Length: 483
Image (tube, rainbow, N blue to C red):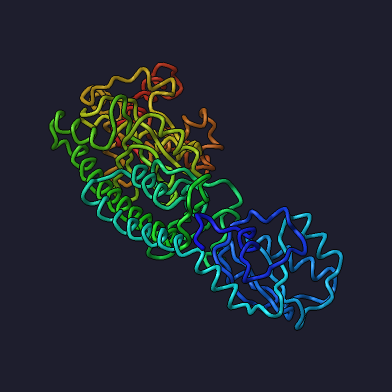
């Protein structure tokens, strides 16, 4: 007898089996995929779900509480029914056992002693042959999906939808942390992921399988039986997990290629060897359009920075100890939320523009972030920055006019007059506080300030002179001339 979907109730109608229902008649509509004998106390790690489990009674505990736990364990694992030998080693079955079967709608069947368990297995195997043919066909078509990826260049969501229709399952993918694994593929609900990659694959209504990748699983595939569909079984879901692993490898390779190309593009933009139109085309390839900023990041592990940038269009370049990030202004909020980060952001500019000014602004801003202890500073957000011109030539002239002698003296004598004056002004001219930051005696700082005033020709007790010096120091910072 072949049926579209074999149920426990169908087995009761097979005359040769002579099965009878002892409890749990509300669950007779459960589907059956196989019949198996087990005398283990806990056979569930070796089950896939939808089995008829047969026992002579050796596995069944003798106590009422133990019998109830045994039945509940089988039901939780997705077993369709428990078939008991009429005699042999069957212990006395307690009322708690039958009550649990009724509460859960878990069929408990009795097999006459004259009917060998192998007869039940043979009848089930014969009845599910048609389903086996369907599963084999689904497996072959899933193998064919590898050809789809190459020949038809399907995107990930379209590929997964085809596999869902073939397999009879709704498919979900996620990282080990539950985040999206592939673009356009939904993630499963919380609580379904196993504690270990070695956990049994069966969950109520489907399977959970690791998606393999070098160094450990890239994530998990969760497959639930689709309403009204004919599920193709674990082997097909395993093949889908392999297809997902290949897609993950392809996506990672594409991302790595884009990352390298992005680093090369950003390096060429910083060196100003790209014409604006070529720069715009390259940035568009990375989905960078509209207002753009340059951010310099320090004191952040590469793994944390890459993770926070993963879902945002960007270019990333490592330059010495700094990480240069080019992207939309919204990246500032994402990067600024990283723990213990120090970052500076330029003012927005249009894609394709030269980056020399933006680089100076970002470097100035990141130095301010380091001095102030703030995670991220935006250039131009301070009151002084609004009064400085954008023209590097004008800034250079201001610095040379006010600070030229001081800079030359510092270079020749390896002194720190400019740093000392800047630190003193940043601490609102509080000598003791500034000296503590500089790790020098207040008298030493006072001497340096007098020497700075003499070299610059500015009396730091004068408001006008102080203002001019402060603006010149900010200009030097914008030009990258201060530490």
